[in-house]
Image 1 (tube, helix red, strand yellow):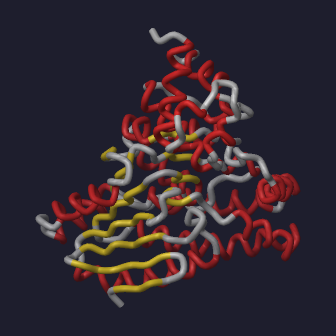
Image 2 (cartoon, one colour):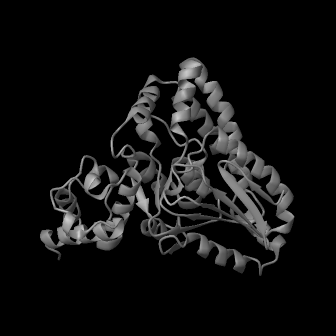
Image 3 (tube, each protein chain N blue to C red):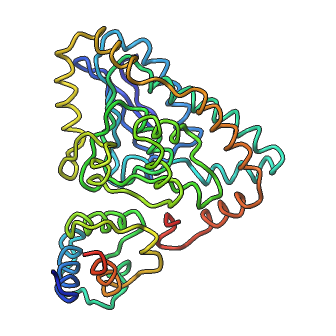
Length: 267
Length: 80
């Protein structure tokens, strides 16, 4: 299947480039629906990758690349399963999302996240699976999970630590503040900063350049320089599941879901 | 060094241009959420615009509870 149009995302393979577009309102929150379609994409990716050299992830929504996990759905789980059972369901969910993220991270294609606006939590973690992040001037990156009494659960901490080091992880994680794209480029997170709304154009131009390289060499180079931090990813799942059963998490989620605050994202 | 008044004026001009609101309709002590008709995600756009324009970093938590342009200007002025 070289093209697909789903409710949360779509993809198309054209001229050796696979473009995966996120388009779930309000800001591509990742819940069961997005996960199921991402799994479908990963299966298709295996079949498409022999005819491609690059993969671009982007959002069609002006609000941003992705605001992270679907917290309303997470809150519903806690209501539905109760605190005793929620860790079990969270683990099953995280195992699935980690399988998707690891498949993207280790894809032999050169992968680019073209981001604008909000790139928070799980959305930031999705972008971190890519080899390059190209951001427009309004992009912002954040791990806001601590405000809910959680840590990022989609593999973000080990991947950011792998790419940039522990100090950056601590700054983002422990303060919950967000970085703009200029700052993100200064610390080496973002490879190119472009004008508002131009991230996809820049990603396409970059993907075109990649077509000039021998695919086997590019894939070998990537595998050499970008190991998957499996051990830390496993530990992340364990910690997340330990934390999610606590009453403080339920209280934090309830506060977020019921908030009418104009700045609910603020830690 | 920018003066506090100049900083405030630049914020009003920038916000008006980005959110397409007539500049003369914005006043320093107004609630910018209401004046600009913006939600929390658009507030992040405003924050980014201001950081880029003034070349400063404004940690999000410093803006918690800030709703008027004058207080916002003071926060930026403190980092210039």
